[in-house]
Length: 402
Image (cartoon, rainbow, N blue to C red; front, top):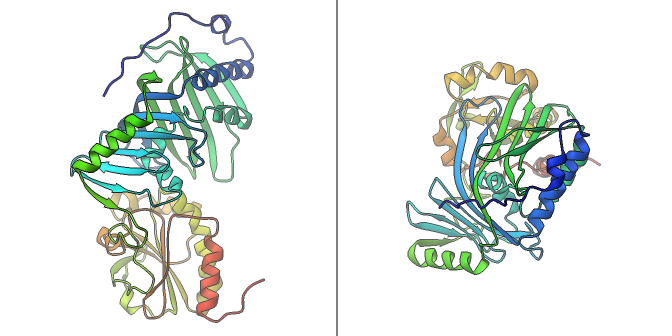
């Protein structure tokens, strides 16, 4: 569905007076202030977005064409609003506070996630979360970005057919992150963000995100309208109600399950690894790949665990199917210059990920001496180290660290 953009014929006097010789920070603050005021005057926004992303050293660019409908609702404590999203992959995702659905139009199936009280993480980590992040529901984020930026510039740069101001924000470098830049192209006519891009450099590689708005309208989206659409799809499609621990196809293998045996190649030695031959008291499996940001964040924790407990019979294995190809393996040496991994890296076929029901990265599993699962976690968390320490100390009857 495409929306014809309606443009106001009145150009604010403030914008007509602005030139690149005016203090850039003040001008950017004024422009962002007008965006915020514009958005807050409306309760809903419908927008067509072409979204692109590329991750670090990945050569492929991921592209989604999406139609997003957003409704601001301060009573919603998770997102601050309700939304619906349909994309070029024939998905429809609807979040309505008390109801939360994903519909797959190609297969005419759907999943009802309403039983999950807070699905914020899973929604935001999905590409959907990036697409919807066009700032209508919470435009005040623009003030936060301005505060955090260390350099600001404003220039006239059009995004045809729109006449736009371009604001560039440069952010301070961090340990492994540098050259972090956000760009915003703001329509001179009505103070709407027409385009947005984010770029940063991590460990020598860039990742890039871009949102292009091809049409928008305000106050034409209603919550009853979205609910009506959801009700009609539920009646027409084969639905599954998501219940944590019961939807086996989407759950990691449960504690107490016998871990499937697998064979892989040890990198870079090229020896063969077989889980069934592993003699360690505890084995930690880390399903990861090189250009996964949160996988990289977990590496120092896992390496520390390995060095701390290896003499006590703990083995950590980095299970990698994504990089198990000639092109990506050529880049592994450079990756290991930035990330010290002293535990074995095991290259496997993607079938191993499927055996363990891994559909997101990183995913961690811990096996006891009988190769039964005693811990699993999808996704990185700051508490990962404490969780692993606690289970290891309990299993091996080690004194707890103070």
